[in-house]
Length: 215
Image (tube, rainbow, N blue to C red):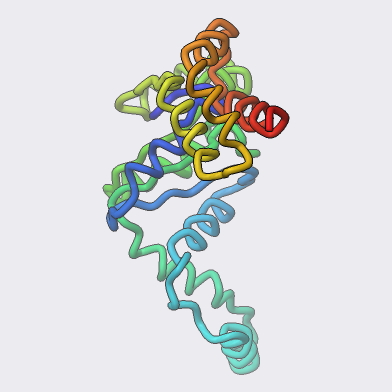
């Protein structure tokens, strides 16, 4: 598990690490209510950018033929999805655990099957404090049995500020704002750190809004 507060940049860091790798798949479980929704999210993530979907209307046609001759309803879409999911990469990254609509035990039971039964490596991105609010002491008791290692990540304020300034560097209308903020970068970082916030999205928003108003 990679643990960090919301907005600390854990998703950005992991996606950067994934870049160019073919053995890794990222999926968000935001709003997932059951295992089917997690599988559907994995299915969509796996097919993203790949031309391996069945022809439009193909599954509906075959389902209709199967039902006509057997009298039974056949969920061919589900069968096709499960077939595709057999080719999941070795490393699966699950994000937004605390934002799922499942209880902690349901969520971990669903995810743990990829480790126990399919022998894949799983990385979880989450805000542990929010999981504790959601499931109380049960989270800590279950975590010890399921999660092998936890890494706590802290926001790199200086590097993030450099990145935000770089995003406005090419805009001629914001040259003065960029020059001013570059000069006062240490002050900007100091003010942010003194606020005790870990949400780099707020720092990005403040930086870009200041540049817009300054210009």
